[in-house]
Length: 164
Image (tube, rainbow, N blue to C red; front, side):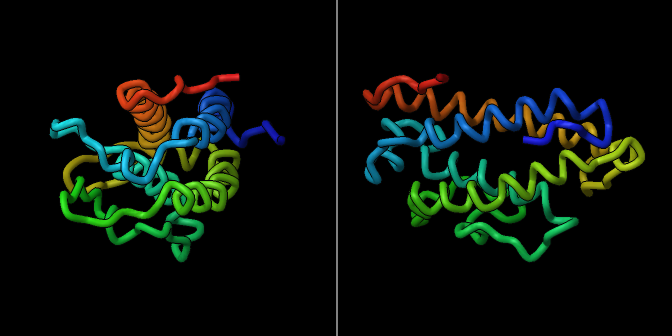
């Protein structure tokens, strides 16, 4: 896989991106459809929402270059929608298919982002940040969600997430 980035600043982000691309599939592997909605009588986000939110985030990385690309559950997640108690979320298989479709496209965005673009500012309405700050947060949030999925695996009596 190509690892030469347009900016040295994204090299570490790319390494994490690649690891998380692999870890995602392992995090949802073997979890029953019923358990993807199991919140263990808490208000915590369930696996179905966490998974879709993570997939949506990867699609959001490509909105400038490929705005036509949408995940299966786009309507449930667009505009940073939170969990909806009565919603029917896509299956893990649908999420995984969307993940495999968008990951190479998002990786290309990360590879090609140069310093000028990284330093440019985004006005998100409620705050401003640079693209570098947004990418850094995005990669951090991916790791956080994969960690939450790994915890859910254990709480629901599934084998631990494999990192091999």
